[in-house]
Image 1 (cartoon, rainbow, N blue to C red):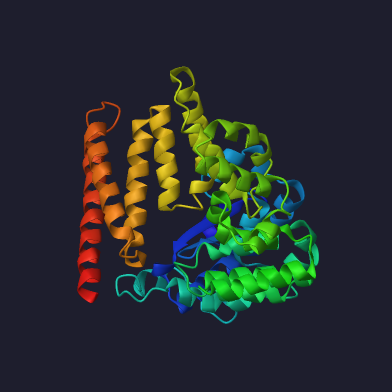
Image 2 (cartoon, rainbow, N blue to C red; image 1 turned 60 degrees about the vertical axis):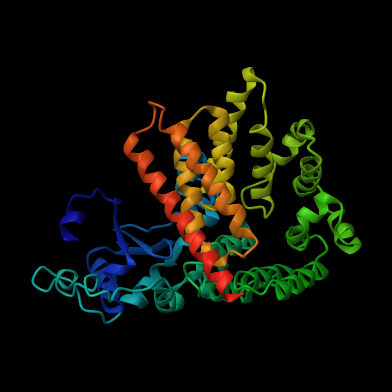
Length: 435
């Protein structure tokens, strides 16, 4: 650490990445203490539940303040940061696990890591499988998390500029990896001064924990507290988007949805055209859909609709151009929404754009997502998904004849699809035996 500091200019920043499996609680505290012994300012970020990033400098680290007030550096290169799932200032705030007061409290009393007492080398928790889990790390860091502390700078200095509703939804994406994430969201909800916003964020916390019915009650409460809370109104409509598109939603759902305006209303209208096969009517809605902001709850659906119609353009002179546009749009959200439906859309865009390399990686992502969720599939899902994977195997064989893709990678992706198919067949056998 001392050598690193000696090479930095004034105000330079030292960055230390660390996977949580290399640390136990004592090593985490010692690493924080060692950084604080060498640098005046230290911050700890957690971009995903299993990754830590320490920042250290001799000057104040005010990333959240700068990006929230000026947008820099995100506004200067939005596509670059989008590749890593950073689209808005809120993404930086959500990743902050311990600010300066938090890191000082975390490090207090911990022994330093030195050359003649290098516990990072000698404790070797990784090889002994004693590293931290995502849930255990959340329990340790909860007391130092500025989003869970009422006196933190986030609430006193930045609150008016941040979308806490978006931050709640962003955190909910990690629930499958860290089961304690709903607790973080709920504690943040209790610190919000706006009662309607607080009820909405509590609804997101409960929904991410798996209680959809209770979440809907909280969204109704949020809307009753503030009829202008369109985020809550959209969450009430979200489970019924397919029914609204097909014209079979209940009268009360349809009445609530009819009050939506702007992009969310365009999502519902686009869904109706899609169900009717009226793809030529979706471009008319594209301008409205494009006004959605990344922090809006309907943003993902807006992008999906914009991608969907572009992948269905069949005229040869336009197909490739719209395919490239579709790929550009889907890349903006797939980093934070890496699920099977997104990879399927990406694959369609790759076909339209004549990008076999992207098609190959999209198929890989689809198969991996399927493997990760196979235990959640119902008996009705299994035959159709098995057939889809068989179709993908045939597509892989066609891609394998294209000189623009590496044969080794083709075989790797083929192996992933076969593994997914075999696991689904095994799952189907288990379900049949249980029935």
